[in-house]
Length: 400
Image (cartoon, rainbow, N blue to C red; front, side, top):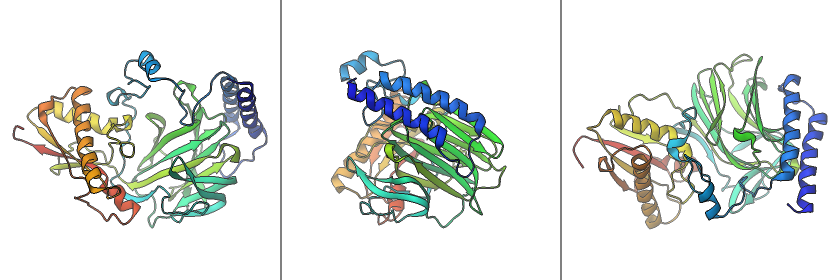
């Protein structure tokens, strides 16, 4: 690391420690008994920052050859976790009724995003590497998605987050009528290595796997089922609380961004109703899922797809006479030819993961793709396009 980088890292860590000492408590704070743990975490971050540099994705730079040499069991070259190796504690399944989807592509740079309500502070639409983000533009900002419904009994909320330094702050809250915080999850605070959570008198804290700093890009998922709430970051379940209604039942979700220096940002926000636990995926004859993840334009199945694919593999293992057709679908963004090809490749990739990683015989799968030719919602809006991006499994009783 260069002398300049060491100084920058030391300054970033010092900012974290200074923030702990001087930052005011806003709304429902985590409590003094957790602050000592937070400061210890920040000290650890300060030491780690001098010894390690990261790129903008939060992963250590390495060559392909180095990745292949160092790949651990359950990892692909490059450090990406295989789908089948993801912990069974990661059980997030996204809701299937999209209430809001926002990638901020409809907003002008520098403007406040149209699908959000500003509660306080200053945020704006920004761009990084060709993507639009909601970015903090002041010292702090609190925003809520514009939706016409209260939090349903079963709901999911997910988004990508990014910070450029270890002083960032991204907090998600459940808000009770009257603007009171029912629960609060501090995802990026105090050195970015620990999640801190509070719901009434219940407090919890979880260190990110390996104690790693969460600088860079990560995917956050939240799943509410009645009074229970689970929170995940990437493929780690970080919070599992059976009752978060001590202060009341939350009706809205609020996101708070803090610390301008770290430029905290969010994008790809998906708020949906569902999901109820499913015992038989083919109870309705066809299983439609939004829980198989790909990067935009990619046919590589991401590790976050583990819960759905594990469930499908378990069903097929227990029902050995059942064969399945897997069909991919896209929205209408891009060309029709490109979308058709992508949907076919994604369906084939799903079958390949089930065969190679979950040991389901390849001859039990038939795959196809429909591109954007079979929409189930209008492609005129972001919510409709998010609904159209799906994978469908159809049970086949005959041999393929």
